[in-house]
Image 1 (cartoon, rainbow, N blue to C red):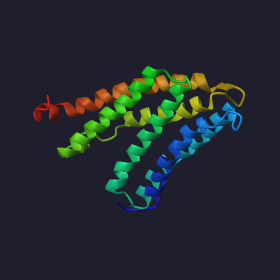
Image 2: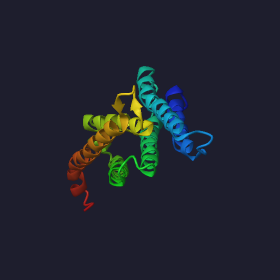
Image 3: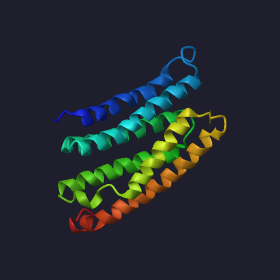
Image 4: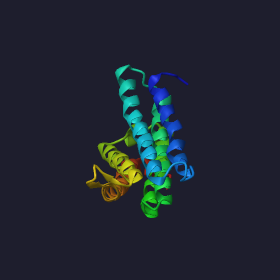
Length: 192
């Protein structure tokens, strides 16, 4: 396993996930709910920034690796799934939307693994649609964690719910997009 700054940042992102979840297990007399929301939001934003920064540094310093390419999306999926479970528990995200997003991530990860095993991983490489979906999720989640008015004006819950709904639609759309790309190989290999 290679060890460099980009991979260290990815591991940091993995380590921050329990903090986003764990802050809500603190007793309310230690940390009131509004402070829990703020702490979880800030930790999630730091984790999201490391997601962008580790990829940027890996490309800039020519430190890309197969392990980093594996770990980065795993960290992203863990981060989103952990935050969604917290938001479902707080009744800030609909169960069905969380199921769609987490289920799609599992299905596409399995599809990518299978495509890699048959040497066709480029067929289901990340598309711009997937990046837009991720951007919608990564914007919606901190808004929903914050769960208050931003600058006294922006209702983060309403904006976050809207973006999460958009992310759910893009999630389904991108899943069908990747399945359509993989379908000829699935048929050819007799996987049906």
